[in-house]
Length: 264
Length: 230
Image 1: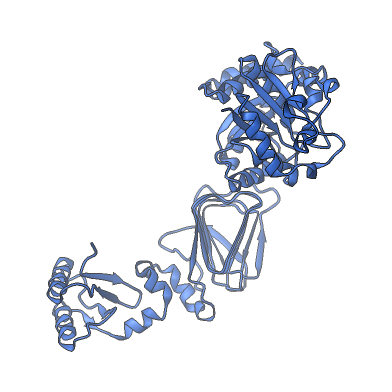
Image 2: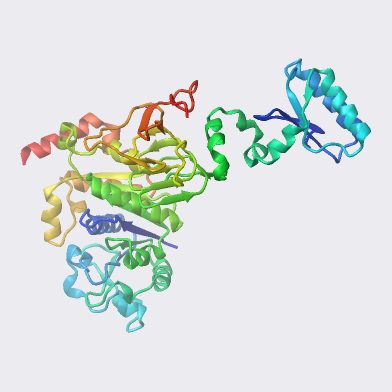
């Protein structure tokens, strides 16, 4: 039986979809059977990020309403053995699916896959409730901004209320140079406010935009630091004990990041 | 197994609880033992039985024992204590001086019940309680606590806190780290300064001055209710 993980944040634009795509690709690259579910009905874009847009025939609403079978709606990624996508519907809205249907869907998917990763929409309304309904654990993505951290805190409260205990945190778009100047919240600041386990820190990296626009994922880029961060997070999800890059050797990471940012 | 006799210290005096299930001889021996082990500590204290023995003979015998050890029988204590729920539910805490200020004002509203929140309150979560609130955890920014009585936070307090929400001017807010975005006591409101950095790295207490200004000062256990006289 596989595990269902929801990637959520509350605020939009912090990198839920990018994180979902990278974790999915990373896990598939580690020979796991992975299904990514785009729960952002009406604003689908996980397919675009994965470069699978052209191959969509059926979507999640078609599955829950019985228009097609689950198998028919799953899109198999040709680059990575084991990576599948269940796309969102583009012409419907969040009310097209209810939490009960999502639960059933997750139960169905977990029989076949090692990991089912759900890309949650922004907000705390029905789309969010749908996305978390069938999840076993949750990953909260935030950026080092007060608004994103505040929303993450709210989301963690809602997750705990929904019995999704001990959500894990990913800090995205982290800029050590700005933190050193005192212009950005530090990892410690966010840890203190949110008080949940840190799954990883992804530094700000132009390469994320470059790869995303090409329908690729940065996790496959051996040279970029953000790719390394996503690979580490992937290994932690699989239960490996990988030390945080920054916690292991703070000075090493900071100087490496500074060098990288300095080159730009 | 509970003891045949237990003694609770209350604000009004000593309350002696007897286990009626036990044999009277048992109770008597246990009372002797208790008094002996107190080594004169109770001398001069006023006392009453929570439930007096039904038989007059027994009652007198027990009173006699207590008086031998210098205690003064004062049956009035019992009615005082029983009419005041805070002392019967937890007699031990009633000697905490902070409660005195409440006691002075509490006749008008029964705000002595306490809600224990055994987790942190996150953004969007709200606790509203017609009594005291104790939070074992943090109050995150965006969270809210509204209490008719006092608010005690055994962690950092960065959300909105309202103590004495029913108009109690004597309510207090105590936090391990007190840096709320907004603090209200009674009908007074204080906002954190716009350029506020982190609050003080030690426990603080907030209370109302006689002219209804919110005062925040270092929490001092020797002056647990703050500097004010109210």
